[in-house]
Image 1: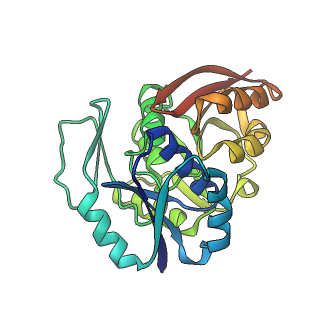
Image 2 (image 1 turned 90 degrees about the vertical axis):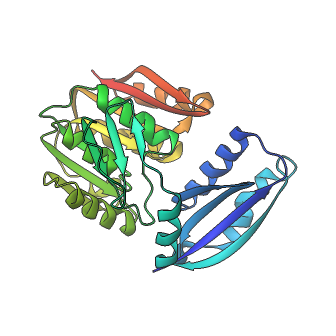
Length: 279
């Protein structure tokens, strides 16, 4: 499989401006991002790349951002080599150690997760994934049935499984992510995760105690009604992939329509993760 790498170069840029651009790129299918010395690179599956769509999205930043960008076609094996050079192990709340297969184990941590992301989103390094993992580490999910929407590498479902979740369904509409979730579950000897490729239409007709959804604001707003149908009374939803203003208020308002109420939220930089609970 081949990919398109779009690398942005900035003379001067604020961190929140980069985050806004990354969010818009994610909305049009870019699912992996990598910092560079003067900007960042964004990756998208070759078949999903559209030059006209990219230019149309970038038009909204005219006059606000000064940048140049280059577009490069790369093979999957080249991406994997580049990823191995840049992926450093990560420690979440001194409890969870996230590493790749080529890093040494660190048994002093309570939980260890081995991740081979390929082109899938979710190594824990992005602020949204980090905050979701923090929620999982502090939540009572033992013996719970859990739905992980937009699962990416499967890292959130894997951590939940390690914390004692009973049954997990991990869904992503990107086939690379779907396959990555299966492979990473096997790498971590997790057998109670069912991976499914698709969107909200493939959510099983089942009852879940907890829903994890690290996607983006627009998709979350569209899917909240579906989540409400499969979430048990008293169940929790943990959302991320959006900003505090105006996104959190919009999501809170939509949740209230379905008896799902805001509990609290975390914030790293401009990114937010939030906990909601159903009546």
